[in-house]
Image (cartoon, rainbow, N blue to C red):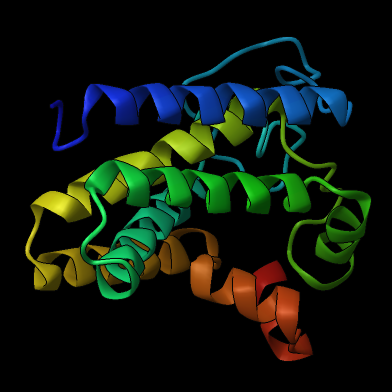
Length: 187
């Protein structure tokens, strides 16, 4: 057991991550930033390297995904081993990343969010996003619920203050865009 996950669980998680990366590759996603560089952090949202590097402002959102997936798993499948819940979380995160990198969602982001010129994620960034989700999932499995909620709120407020975007606004603007929010984000 490593971090509460069995060896079998880590093998399943690794296999899911490899399958996820292979699907992105088959979709034609670039392995790394088309700019040719690899960076640990890229902090400029309105740039050609956003969602291309290992981490960016949206990495905080993926940690929150992990918090949410852990909470949902303990509510919906409380008797299942942690590795089963983690495998389901990886599957959901990978499905979202695959959908997010489809032409329909890329176009939607361009139309209704602050992601002007967004061209989708590199495979490196998508896999890193899934790893940030795993980090959040495992952290939530070790923390009290109120600490997890407090960190999620802090992440949301921090990114809202720093880049005028966060998980909540991202979902809102993708599902039901509000022109005033879009204008405020662009300011």
